Length: 86
Image 1 (spheres, helix red, strand yellow):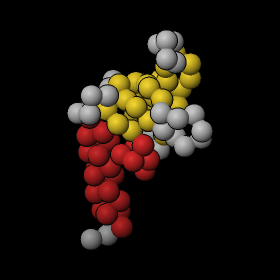
Image 2 (tube, one colour):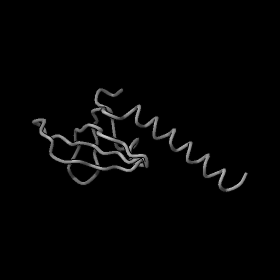
Image 3 (spheres, rainbow, N blue to C red):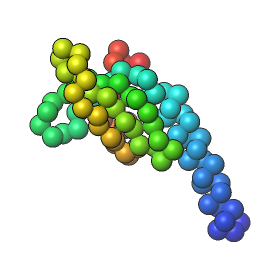
C-alpha cells in the first residue's frame, strides 16, 4: 500500500472518529476540570471541529454564560463527564 493510499485511509478513519464524537458529545451538558485551579465546571458542548477540537460553553452557578473553552481530542475522554453520567 502506498503512502497516499494510507493517508486516505487515515483521513477516512479520522472523519469516522469525529462523526462518533459529535454523536456522543454535541449539545451535551458536561462537567469538567481543566486543572487550572477553577475546580469542576459546568458547560455544554457547542461544536466539534473537523480536527476534533471541542468548544464548550461554560456557565456560572447561576446559569449565566461566562466563557468558552476549547479542548483538543486527546483530553476529552479524560476531562469531560456527561451530566447524569450517561
